[in-house]
Image (cartoon, rainbow, N blue to C red; front, side, top):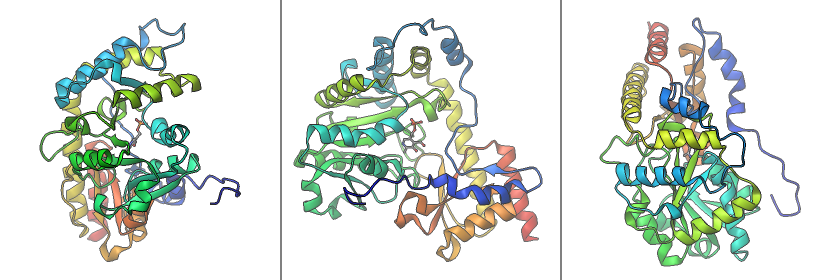
Length: 367
Ligand SMILES: Cc1ncc(COP(=O)(O)O)c(C=O)c1O
């Protein structure tokens, strides 16, 4: 796209699965949808109670988040991730996707001489889309060392995502923070799966200091609140202040009742520990089911996706096979960038009995 061409939104990746959705739905017992990383388990009752009884419906909520919301978020950062961030350097977002999609345009307003967003070559598609929506260049990188200095000179920001969607990998956040600081480029660290880290302790870029970095966190996955839309960003005080001021003008607000529910959710860890066990078990069941058809994939370092190599490298063929024989819908890896074309992403977001059904169907198709 050049500046003079009108923007035509590309097809939404998951809409491209509509045909295979029908195929999977035809399986006896129905479709097992493992394509989108949407939670299937309920949020805790006390969180829903807080949502219902906040009394916060009437007035406008603070765009930056209520003091209680920001304190709860800062308390969670200290308790779960061992980092101290003053609540004044924490701000609410309406789930993190809108922030991921919006940040490039706001950074560009602040630094109009720059026009490039750097993001991991295999990643959540919204990093690149945020660049496009800001009229910027979206430039993927495989390793920090491979980034062309000419692209770095034009960069508004660099994205990292640990644990990664879709690969589960835990990249070196200290190296990313140092890379950004050396060049004066903000590093934005999307950490929405942090409590589903399987390989060692959870990690945040904020362990490496807050200067020049922002961490993004979400209640969608940890507390099964994707439908409520609540997250926060925290880190470099100047950057958080700038973004929260712009966002106040634009009217981004987490609804008051949702903020109240968010306080209850950020203040509790027991429900997340239970959720961890569920995802861990589902991942293991799915690993076994895939092994049965010769697809060899191990437990990821983090998150709740299996990044499975397709036999012969044909991800669409594996996607079709899983739909036709297993009644399961998964995502071909090209949704996460051209480098992902040889893999499929399997989201372990269905109950055990549904995953067992997929294994059973695949087993029956083999015999
Ligand atoms: C890597 C990553 N970042 C951000 C999001 C957005 O989550 P939410 O907007 O619900 O906070 C997702 C959702 O799947 C994701 O996988």
